[in-house]
Length: 415
Image (cartoon, rainbow, N blue to C red):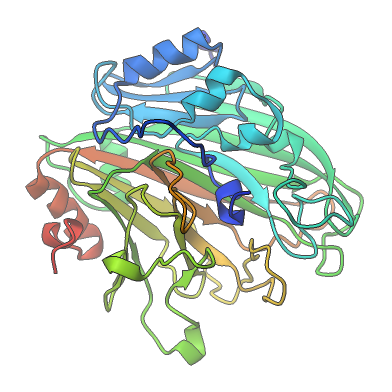
């Protein structure tokens, strides 16, 4: 495919795993209006963040080989339109490298796990599980990925990695990802609904693949890996995330939702609402909090609605048909089952409990593959699709209702 020109363009455990880092500021920067896409392009150029611009017309996606082939941001309204992804501008401007580039933000980043447990790939063998010892594997945090090929609407990336888990077991892998921008007709076909002409759309798919390039099979005894996709967006007091879930008895399907950060008060002050068919979670950037939903409960879809900027975001993730598949836990805490992890999680960045530290207002939606028990030479993939819609509340509510049965009133937090 034709190559496009490159445009030069401690903390809680979950905070370290997320797209950003808690930072103290003299003044709070919580402007609810989104920056312009063109402003972010100028920023990338100024600080030597090389990006590919994919897409057609006003639907544009910025992808970075330097930052592991991640989608940094996108827009459905051209250069002057809103930039829809959250980016850690301070970190990129400082040109810091190493573990912190894992938290550079962006709408779609390849992540690898597990983070916690006896077989964590984020801690050296024998190390205490603390923020000081936390290290993301270099291939997924520090090193640029090779751009294999690109076209007007697609880019392919690849890297090779060699690392150990906390048990001292070495893994050799090849990671690949393919970013594809979807046009309006493809969006309508995938979602199975008609998109009103007045609604602006930008959408893309990430195909993420992991191959065991070592000489032996990954097993429960040696530790398993998984693939995740982490997606960061701008938070404000009028943003809520919705996760439809499978109803059923706790004895058969497990708890509906779990608080993923100890003492996060995720359920306090109306932040978390459990409806008979969906979970609603307030992501205002004011409180460090998080929730997770298991593979048995997940329906393979999550939504967020930004009432301030009239943006509806839909995330689809491909789940295996076998509901009994094991998911790896990311928790650092001991005594939890390492095969009872989340299929989707939501993180709301904010100050740690009982402090007055001001933090960057963003939230993150992450999706995960099941545990990968791969023979030598074998591969597995994880697909995530991200759709952004901009328009009137009526039209956005119509899209949400057709997809999930969630009305505009519910999107606004009205019950």
